[in-house]
Image (cartoon, rainbow, N blue to C red; front, top):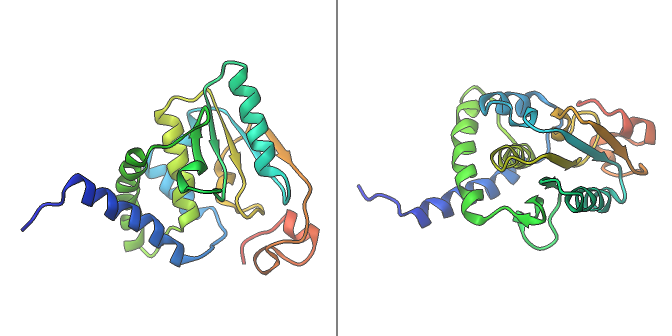
Length: 192
């Protein structure tokens, strides 16, 4: 039996993360709540700002994080999707998560997600990346974290945070196949 090198293990863990995209989108807080419980609820170890909306939420998050950082805070920032590289989604004081750190967190999350899958609870890519950000921010001892909502609705995985402040930019018709066909349905979406 041949043992994997650290580089082979890192590549395997990162492939596992990318492979989670095949599970698609699943609205609901059950999986993320259970996963975070298994990880010691890292999202409860620092204050948060939560930003939702259809347009401008990523820019709003960047501005908030920049102002807080310039004010002397150590700031975690979670946004999606990335512009060029996945690691942009998770940053502390403007510095994206390192590839090595990403791989180590993937290894830890894979173990917990495999346990959940055995009981029929398959985590999605967004749930895992959200948990990864929350763990990274805890471990990096941020003073505050800024979270951008993913697709939106009440059951977006980022809604496990208890924010100091919530920001909602404008809401428009988007993701109607998941969130509903009116602004009211989108703003208050419950999982099907």
